[in-house]
Image 1 (tube, protein in one colour):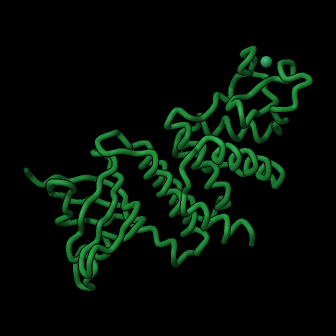
Image 2 (image 1 turned 120 degrees about the vertical axis):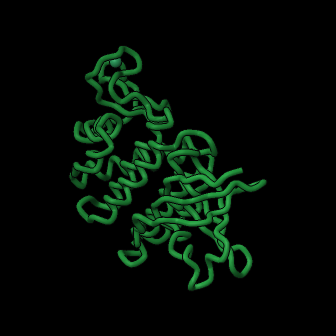
Image 3 (image 1 turned 180 degrees about the vertical axis):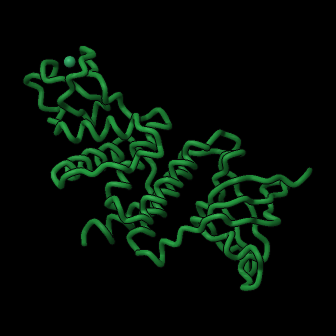
Length: 248
Ligand SMILES: [Zn+2]
């Protein structure tokens, strides 16, 4: 067994005993892996900063029986959300939890890693509303995993002249096909445009649009209900957002 180098982001980190930390790394080379950072709780240990959540860099790892051990790390970016704002910290934690949910060891996660990195950059920049970044992230994550509905064509007739979104049916319809049926709700043109943009734009331009308050409200409503209906997993960090951010 030889040491290897991986590029990745720490998506979770917890103390093990009094001196060690167990981290979960989302890597470009190996998907999601768990690794021990020995001594990373001691203030003078060189791994202290590398073992923090939201740290991106190069990690030198050594394979063990059940998990890896980090022997060295070169941090290239630490996203310090705590210093920035608690809201951003909650959103970033939720994004990590969602990334954790969707990735596995040895399954390519480079798209998810890049999405996470871009989303963190967007959160740090203040140019886009935090809530909008969260919804863009959620849809793009569904998209990467093949779970985003086709928002370009009516499910029944294939028309691109789409006007309605069905949360339950996980699809969109045109007016003609949904006449007299109220289960699919009317979609604002700008909300449809936003969904199409999220599905198709390059990651580097993903966070470059803004929406009006009304469009944001519709995106929020559709996304929240969609995620609740189609994800069986309870996200702890999502509860934090709902309790601490949404209600205030
Ligand atoms: Zn149709």
